[in-house]
Length: 69
Image (cartoon, rainbow, N blue to C red):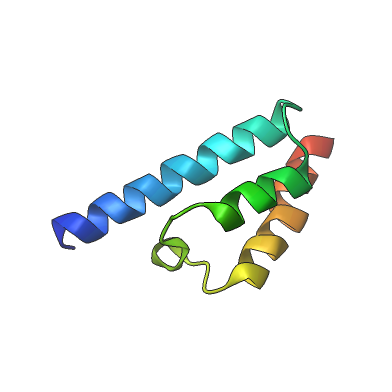
């Protein structure tokens, strides 16, 4: 993997983890977290999110459920 691609992947993972943590801690809602990701200049496809619907599904399942547990 090239250095730029590795850097983009790391940045996307760090950003997603920080938004997830904000949602889990109750600082922001799931919807706000989703919008924050949508507005970010992150290469989501590099970590497996091909489109906005993929991010939406992830937040509706993984992130929202983790808030309940």
